[in-house]
Length: 281
Image (cartoon, rainbow, N blue to C red):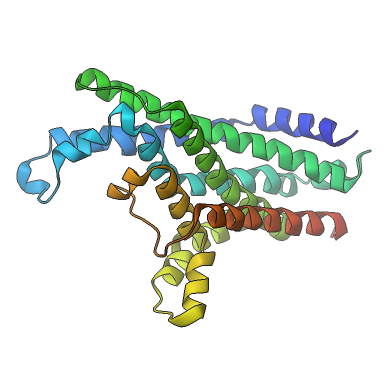
């Protein structure tokens, strides 16, 4: 059995798991409900005294088809990372919970080939998650176009392709961290708990610490959230109206490099732990 065979086996396993499809549906549902339905109701139905300072017309414009890329990326940057983290943790942590990792590791493929095939399968799942986000956005903006039939021209294909790439990278980086934590700690729960703690708490605290000088700038430029925000703004500048921008100015090329480096380091740590560790221990 080769990398290809391991990839096929892992893909089949992920495809048969209800939890994966629930997370795919959750991704689409989050974008649809929070990115479109809730904001549309807020812009058109909420009492004026309840939305003081809100520009309802601008908010409504952000829900139209032309703003699809910006709106979806705003939602993926806010929620997609957590979903990707959970997918990675489930895919690699479940084997330890089911006590099947020893059987899997003692079959014909070498551990490196097995790990590579599984990583490729998880990467494919990240592409599906990003596609689900845009499916939810397309449904949401389609509903807005029906309810508010004015200028409903869609965004250029090139913009959509760039936005999809950023969404897939965002989900993929956090998925890699979930894979790493699940493999190192041999637990789905620990991986999800520690990953969400870092994503929701530690990064937020590091982002607001008043660190001055080169150290503060280095920390700000190294944070995953800041690099994702830089890419979102680079692809869809209008997303700053709902998402905001990064805490520091980061070049798009540097942001891609940093995020890919995070993913590569996470997978390398996971592979080293899986290959060198006594599975039965």
